[in-house]
Image 1 (spheres, one colour):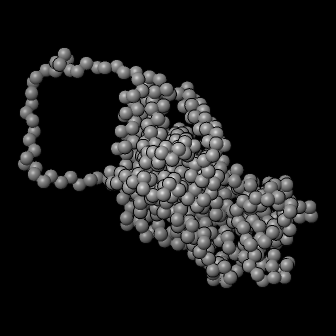
Image 2 (cartoon, one colour):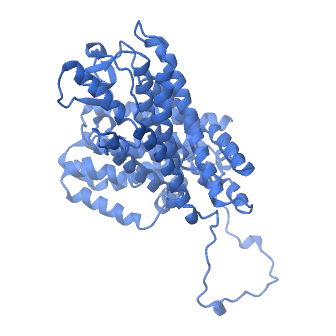
Image 3 (cartoon, rainbow, N blue to C red):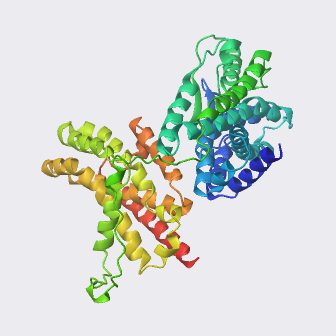
Length: 517
């Protein structure tokens, strides 16, 4: 038991002191602040048929609880799904493997550490929701702390524990393939969000995030007001429009049935069961590869020689302060990174860019083709930190104008080379604004990867955000069109130029700060 608690304690302290935790905490607090809009805001987060709730304790407590359950479950997974990987990189896992700690004890401790990290963020959002109640609440309503505690305990906490367990399971199942971890959970999250049988208590038991019983009660309240049993237009998210124009209804919380409470416990137990079930497959930090020699007799040990080394016979060292050599090196590193069979997919994507219709090639094939390079781009400026050679690279000759510039230029050239068939087609069609949009998109996403790599000193943050950007764009969200697939007129080109300029400035200032340190 002492070793179990010790692992939880020190793993929790290590995680909460990391840059990733601070970034996620800031994002969570910023988003949590917007869960309940201020009275004069031009948006709403939960709207039922043109109705929003009056600002009483139940509305603040339940709305922030279900929004935290969903939002923190999504981004929290990407925060905590690297516990085992961190132990591998810091060699702590290899030390642990030599001790008497059992695999199940270690994995359960990691699960609880994941949960405590997410619970810390949820507690801070909880405190902020209480503070927002005093700032925004409607007159005549006093603080009822039970309307805050109950939804967080029954809705948010079990969801976070399930996600903490899934994060550990994905690490064991997918190993070091972090991209597969991220993509598989994102699709699992989507399945869990849409799956529900909303009209019965037994149906609410199948809701992993526990939010549908609350929204169902809100819909029932509005139906009682208007006297209709028709399906109400439930909108969860950020609905643009002045909230003062919406009608108001009084929501007084939910009387949770016993079956629902049992289901929340069962969802948590399911997480524990998954951790126990994958314990036999845990590698316990044993990465030895069996070596097989087909013809060991053919190996000959060269005889010892006493010939001295003649310095004059060695090639003369050539000093080169230019960028071309570094550019070539960085470009080769990008090409050789990852599995060789991935280049078969890249070549297929380039062929599709040349033969499919320009609309499909630009709007669908190009973002997928560029996303396949996520592992290459994510290590663009973070590989120095992960390989612990940043002190060496920072002390090189002109580390910004030579090293950093060559990294960004090499990655931009790689994306442009992949998009060459489409760029040629735009050139023949005389659509130079579309060409410029694609080029600016390539430079912009490379700068985005470089900046996030320098700020987080890792690759996970960019991998997650790039996947979400690509997925959202494919689902026709124009705000995230970074390469002109939906709109590439002159104002768009000017906007992207300012974004590229802004990312360049942030990257330059960040690297200068790191050099001073």
